[in-house]
Every structure is written in C-alpha cells, then in structure tokens.
Amino acid sequence: METSMKKEDVRILAVETSCDETAAAVVQNGRQVLSNVIYSQIDLHTVYGGVVPEIASRKHIEKINQVIEKALSDAKTTLPEITAVAVTYGPGLVGALLVGVSAAKAIAFAADKPLVGVHHIEGHISANYIENPDLEPPFLCLVVSGGHSHLVIVEDYGTYRIIGRTRDDAAGEAFDKVARAIGLGYPGGPKIDRVSKEGNPDAIAFPRAKVGTEGSDYDFSFSGLKSAVLNYLNSCEMKGIEISRADVAASFQKAVTDVLVGHSMEAAERFGMKKFAIAGGVASNSALRAAFEEACGKRGISFYHPSPILCTDNAAMIGAAGYYEYIRGTRHGWDLNAVPSLKLGERA
Ligand code: KG4
Ligand code: ZN
Image (cartoon, rainbow, N blue to C red):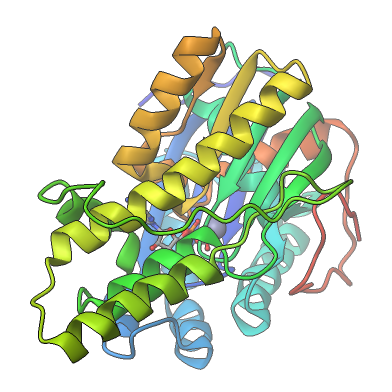
C-alpha cells in the first residue's frame, strides 16, 4: 500500500460509530484511502430484527481501540504522521456516537492534533470522491440509507442544499420492514436485492407515492408503499393464496426505484445538473444502480456511485469529508458533543 508522504499531504485519521459499525480509516488528501477498517455488529443485532442501541454502544466501547489501532497499522502510519482526527458527531444513536467522539477527542488531545467533527450524511456523500477523482461539486446527490432519504444539491465542498427529503420512513427502513414482513430477516436491503433477481418486478402493482407540494416538489414517502405490501400479504393470507417472495421483493424494489429515479431525474433537469451521484447503504442496491445508469445515460448525465463497501457505514467516507472540512478551516474543541439529530450543513 502506498504510504509515502509529502510535507503538504493531509492525512486524516477518521472514526465512525453512529450506528452498528465500529469503523476507523486513514485517508490522505481526501481521496486516497490508506486503510479502512470496519467491525460490523450486524450478527449481534440480527436476532432482534434491528439495531439495539444499548448493545451497539457497548460493542463500540469494546472494539473502538482495536479498530483504530488496526486502521493506523494497516495504513503503516503512526499518530505523529496524522494531520487531524475526524469523527462523526451526528446524526445517529447518541450512545453510539459518544463512543467515537470520546475516542477521537482522547486521541487528538493526547497526540496534540486538531479535531474535526463530521456530519454522517456529508460522509456518505463524500464517499463518492474516493473512487471518482474527477468528481467535483456542483452535483446532485441522492442519499438513501437506513435513516435518511435526501435529495441534495452539493453546491461546493461542505455546502449543501436539500431539495427533497422523506416525509416518513427512510428508503432503507422500508427495505428492512418489507424484508421482515416476507420473512427475510435483518438487514433487509441486501436480502431483498438478492431475492429480487429471481422475481418479476411487474408482478404486483405497488403504489408510487407522489407527495411533492409547492416548495418541496422532491419529497419522498415510503410508508404508504410499506402498508400496501403488508395489505397485499394479509389479503393473500386471507384468501389462501401462496405468495411469491421473489415477486413481492422485486415489485417492491421496482416501486422504490421508480420513485427515487423519477424524482432525481426531474430535479437534475430542473436544476440543470450534469453530474449525479448516489450515496448511503441503499445506493449499493443493484437494481437501483442499473436504473440510474440507464436514466442518466439517456439524459447525458454523468453517474457516480461508490463501491458497495463505501456505501454502507464506514470511516473512509468520514476521512474524505473530514479532509474537506479540515481545509475549509473547521476545527472543534474538546467540548465537542454527540448531536443525534444534527442537520446537514449545520456546524456545531
Ligand atoms: O448507510 P447505512 O449503512 O446506514 C445508515 O446510515 O442508515 O444504510 C443501511 C441501510 C439498511 O437499511 C440496509 O437494509 C440498506 O442500507 N441496504 C440496502 C442494500 N444494502 C444495504 N438496501 C437495498 N439494497 C441493498 N443492496
Ligand atoms: Zn449511514
């Protein structure tokens, strides 16, 4: 792995613990990932059908030091070579966030390095910079994760304009709930993605919600779709009709994809965006990627997406965002706190 360092290089040690991944990474100059260590707690939470905040916090405490040490050693770097320490301080689970924030503060204080707090969604968006050296703002980005569905104009590094958001469930949450209803278990997204390959996406006509109103034309709503799937399952059960899990999964996935692609392309046209990116856990969905590939291709829009491992929670994305925050002068004090409902673009 390339670890040579010039004097002007900015090497960020990044920490991410906002949900159920304990992660640390070393990223150079915003785009070169020297290490990316992720300890996923998914197996621990699967038995409960979702993330249990208390378990997540405890596991983060157990793993955080090991994960950070491994990130430094994988990157063949030492703390003195680190320029700054970046950490996710919101949004997320407060107890989980606190573990990363406390660890990052302790390391930055002990090593006498600047501390840079990073917004989790800014991290997801910035994951696109890592493998796309030519990508620079302005561009339109759809962020679809377990907790968020945002359509964002990235006006500049660190400057965001949200033009659409979910009114109820996040896209990933809908995937997880539908997966549970058809007995696929947690986390639902990757399982629906896999099962859908065997199903017919046009088998069941699930609704495509259009909730946009004047001033918020690009908002999303997924709870009606989730209810429609549940109603369909109930009515099949009552009528004694055997369901095809693959058809339900594929038809649900198509309904989500149609809405996400529809809103995004309308917005891209309206705002004259020639570059479009996707981010967040759901952005690793294969049908969604294929649909965007086609939709962007037709319109002459360049389409960007991170590799699946950089779509779901990781610290390399926090290192990328942390770099751009660092060079714009963002610095946090030792009083940095976890902010569970931090707004995108807000700086504590
Ligand atoms: O970004 P992420 O790791 O965590 C949050 O910040 O929320 O996203 C996790 C979400 C989960 O809801 C998971 O089911 C979904 O991303 N997900 C997927 C896929 N992989 C993960 N959804 C659809 N298709 C996938 N392949
Ligand atoms: Zn996330």
